[in-house]
Image (tube, rainbow, N blue to C red; front, side, top):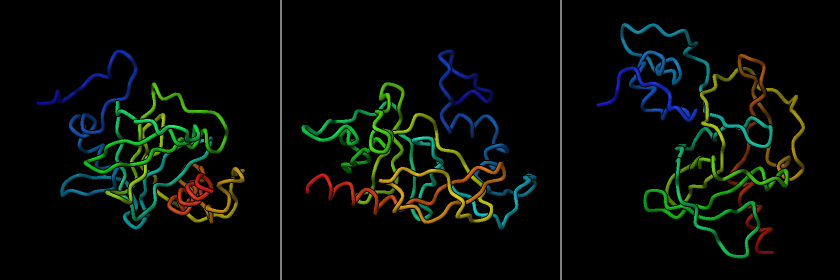
Length: 189
C-alpha cells in the first residue's frame, strides 16, 4: 500500500502521478477537473481542460482526441542511419512506437536522454513518442488567440492557433500527426 503522505525522493525527482493521487485525492481532482459529491473544487465546469508539455521553449497541447502516457526509464532502441531527431523506437503495450526529439528536430540541440521521459501520444499503430524533460501538465484553456510566439519554420505550417491559459501563457494547437508524417516523408525522400 502506498504511503498516504509520500515524501519526494532525495534525488529531486518528481513523484509519480499515482503517488500524488494517493497522497491528496482532492488536489488530484482539482488538477483533472473531475468532480465527486462533497468535494469542492474551484474550476469552471465549462472551461476545456487539456494536457500540455513544453518543448523547444514552446508550450504544446496534446491533441484533444488523443490519449497521453508518460513512460520513465524506458529503453529506446536506436535505428541505424537515422537523424538525431529520431532517436529510435520503444515497445509500448506491445506496439512499436517511434520516438521523436523535438529539440533536435526544431532547434538542432539534442535532448539529454539521461533525464528524459517519453510522452506517448495515441495508442497502438497510431501512437508516437516525444522526448520530454518534465511531466505534462493540466491546462484550463481560455480564449483562442492568433497572437503566437515565434515558431520554428519547420513547425509553423502545422500550428493554426493557440489558447491562453489563466496565467497568460500561449498553448499551441499543433497537428502532430501531419507534422510527423511530413518529417517521415522528408526522411525517405
